[in-house]
Image (cartoon, rainbow, N blue to C red; front, side, top):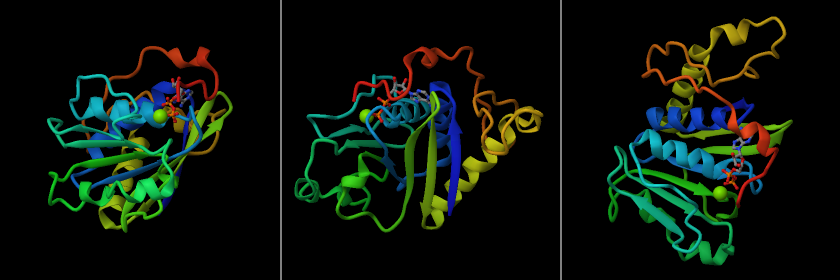
Length: 207
Ligand SMILES: Nc1ncnc2c1ncn2[C@@H]1O[C@H](COP(=O)(O)OP(=O)(O)O)[C@@H](O)[C@H]1O
Ligand SMILES: [Mg+2]
């Protein structure tokens, strides 16, 4: 199951992260792919906010994994950027999703394309630059992850009907997903007030 979504500015990426917090479940695995500065950490930050994490989320460069067991669903955040495939194998990532040693949570893996052994089920997000914003291609494998993606698509469809109908807008789903009006199945999120990322330009991140 696949889906493509345009993220015209940083607020759209943050909307997506907060929506994922509402649609993912314990045991979800997010594979985050894309170049440096494409928005992976931004997504995990907003996912964490949606899970009630108040401490700042940065990429776990030296610790390899940041664990947030107190979140509404535990969050395990990896960044594989600096690792070789054999080092990644030695991390035994699977202990974070087999539910034995750690409570089942959401595992978010930046640079997942470097992972030599993918889990059997996952939600993959591939970020790429798109004008001054980003585009994300989703692939959902497994029933639970497909259900999460379906919920996300439904939330997006309910987010901004006027944007979908605007005469000059590109065909769905290219419209702006950051002005939710009244999602039915999911808790409404406050509409963002500004677009602070506009001045930052494409792929202008710290990692
Ligand atoms: N949809 C978007 N459009 C424009 N800029 C974005 C978008 N999403 C995130 N950004 C910006 O991209 C930069 C890099 O994001 P970051 O999350 O650090 O990337 P990564 O973790 O993939 O290296 C940040 O400055 C962030 O504000
Ligand atoms: Mg990052």
